[in-house]
Image 1 (tube, rainbow, N blue to C red):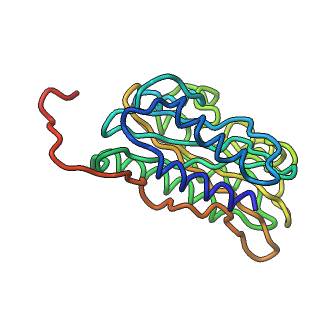
Image 2: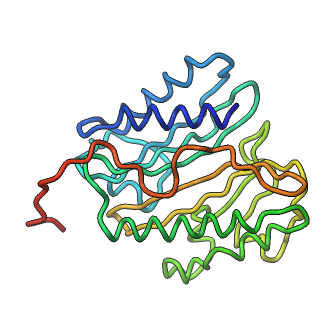
Length: 238
């Protein structure tokens, strides 16, 4: 049910997004949408970040005005329906097709995400999953993994937002936890260019005895384009 609510909220976000709105306005609209769903107890956070606010990911929202061509991502961070939590990112491009470079960065983040999802099975460990992601140095040139904390990671979902297992190269490589049937968790990845734009995506999944079930169903294989237009000038653009 939480997955279905998340799907609906991202669909509503797609319909509502347009240039001229602030991040705050989009957050407020999605919060109102969610609180009108029967059984919704709490919406801890709806993260909406646009343009340069998407990288590094500051996990917040502001009065920044969304511009034509901006990359925007939205995260349903801990909506609580009948006690159960969510965490569910998707990335949008408002008013135009994303650039070739943006598509390439997104494809990289998507590969990291699905490589890690394919490592999930009963009897595997959090180490097996975390090894599917590059190190912080390989991906972004950081000296320490801690500098990229939560850029590539996973966490349990249930009656708490960050239930076990927690999956990260920071600790999972040396302290692996076995994946067991019935576990529910989210895996999330991101990539971007500092103070320009970034993309982030996330899937929620359930571990069954012989398979995994992804319960987040909004399109993920490419950036969701909202009301694209042609004719943009590139002259004088950085």
